[in-house]
Image (cartoon, rainbow, N blue to C red; front, side, top):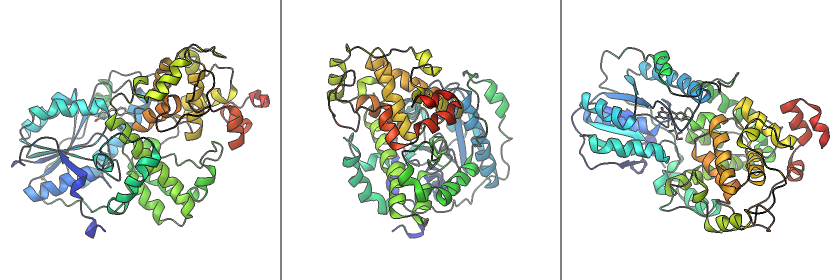
Length: 459
Ligand code: FO1
């Protein structure tokens, strides 16, 4: 067990071989944008206490991030404002640096004469590039802490895993040691004065982003809203999660993915809350399977496969079968714009795309159907892969996330799946159709709820 909820040293790894210095400890917050249940922040707190130095937190705001539009920056900024407030209450200075993180971060660390720098973990190439650019320009110790996963990604497995069934035993073997509670942050050497508040409006005005894709109405971002959403899910929907995981009409989905993506909610805390709930073992395990096994499998995929965001990254068997069928006649062919505007012949697909456009989420089960139909109705498998990613990243609030990349790679490229019966266009990639959906949920009801039109009568 974890006495007093200590911090397991295996959650951190060193990114350079420099010793801790005599200046403040800086926590470089990026992925896990929250004050509570944050192993990177807790590790930095402890380091600051050991060095008898103050703790500071910094967020490096890049001018653009993989094409993310205003919808995502609005969600992120409103969450970061809450982080600023939460840290101020703890007496922790919070600074936002605008510009290329590989440059702004080392400058800041030098100006502060930092004794140590603690970053959180992301398997994405862009963020890894920031760290690779920053590391040689740092004169202090540089640590990385996996605050996103229950089992640190690098510990779960030393290689790209084949499927959920191969990583599941490895994750479960470490679950007891890592699915623990969190210590409270200990701060003893904080400065008396804190920096002035962040100029959020000025920061936003400097972003080079697509402002036409607006925030999703009615959705409240931030750590407090995430906690409320988790409480509501555990109290009212977890008890029927297993049975309705594949039913977009049920509302049983946790709705936690945008909060998990921006790190406004800790997956480990969510897993602990579910484990403590009165829900049945079957429902708790169904939730843990998605939150722990599937999510950490996607982290593993992105961490060990740097072509996670490309058709090239899929397994050889899948690439072979898809290329053998690349010349097959397509029942329909749509341009990226037609997909984007939900203008296909299929009311169910259009309803799923409409949900994505309007609410920024697409139900887990439907996301698979949605992506597979893009494969079926695109000119080439590689084009389909790029269109699915483009739409997911532009509109899904949990876009640009390992879960999203891996979801598209599973649906179109058979990643973590196996060959099925061969058929046109798909080859041996698993096939899905609306009849399959109709066996899982009330399709006309879903379509009506998304489009409120008579299209539902087609089924
Ligand atoms: N992380 C940062 O450290 N700085 C950013 O400016 C930033 C922008 C951003 C925009 C959209 C989005 O979906 C994520 C963004 N993130 C940013 C990264 C995010 O917090 C995660 O680290 C990655 O998405 C990996 O999951």
